[in-house]
Image (tube, rainbow, N blue to C red):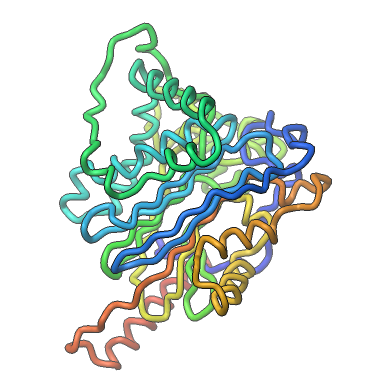
Length: 386
């Protein structure tokens, strides 16, 4: 897998109905006036500084979730955006459990972050099945419906201190829902894991991760849409079809966590189902030219191209140091004045992460650093052709 995708200057990802999920999510699910209250958070450690925000907007419900853990462990940071569709419970489930599974996987302890992240995406689907999955989803659903506002924001923005001490075995449970095949709702997942000078990005769906290098935007994830040949081929081989730009005429994404109705072929692996949670995983070596990383749901990307957002953030950074405030200003810029076009009407979630510059080792010469920089830029640009 190539380590990065060059930004496409033309926006080809806008959906006329501004939907991010099942066909039932149409423009009729909009409010008469948008909910513009924003739930924001800032934090930092010795490696990174981050800010994030989320806003319901015109949507009747808030179905986004996120995780920001600058200290996943003593040397690793984790950030994730989860954009729900058909409901919010799968996104909340991922915000609670995906990073825990990354930590728990044996590959992580061996230093193989890529494998641990990849397997954790698939693990989410496994965990949401059966009696235990049904019970946990029910609990999350009740808690989500019961609480609102800042309480919900606190619950669903996990911090690093709660991770390592809450790793479940997720044992099988007998019960009336032992044959539960999993939720029909789903979510995208776009996560970034940072350790030392490595950035690992994993994505399933159309949330996106973008890095700014010398002010230029590079996509580190690929939007999984039915128009992509590799996605279409898998769908057809699995017995599915594409109609009106949607998987089986329903879902406008080709990869997602949840959506178990598209994953019922017992003769196929999880990676080969009509819709799969299997992520693309890219690894990039960070350098001094890297400014920041943005993770955001399609509520942002439907309104701004990757380069437009990078340019906007750079302009804001000239006078604003609080990163969550910059995220909030992005929402204000994207929010539509009405629901007539659909764009700017979705839930919005954005995480902005700045890198704190490491001290260069004295053994690294200027020439060596420049050569490595050229290699990294070449990797990013070569991926544009794939």
